[in-house]
Length: 113
Image 1 (cartoon, rainbow, N blue to C red):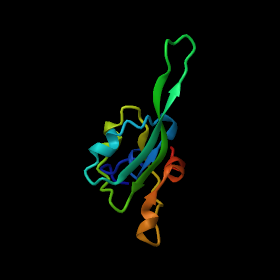
Image 2 (spheres, one colour):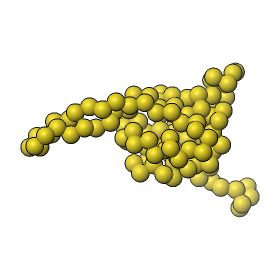
Image 3 (cartoon, rainbow, N blue to C red):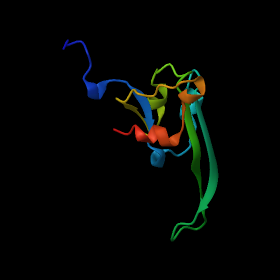
Image 4 (cartoon, helix red, strand yellow):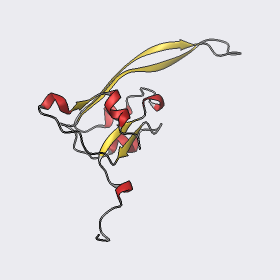
């Protein structure tokens, strides 16, 4: 093995998602140069004990990455302030047609390290 090659744990395979960490802030969507990320969310009111009024939070409904458009630049991973996006060493996401390259929450979460 060459000393120039990265270790498997450092390899950029595919972008994975930790949906529970995503706050639907839309930073990854806005910063993506190819617009391959789509995100849908809704707002809910959360009552906290001792709080003067309810707090509004965004709840993630749908998140998808179209790997047919993605150029694997990693900007979305770098700009996510909540570490909801990460590089996973997985790479097996081939598809028989272009529509199969669009991966949703379930598949993106399956690539957790």
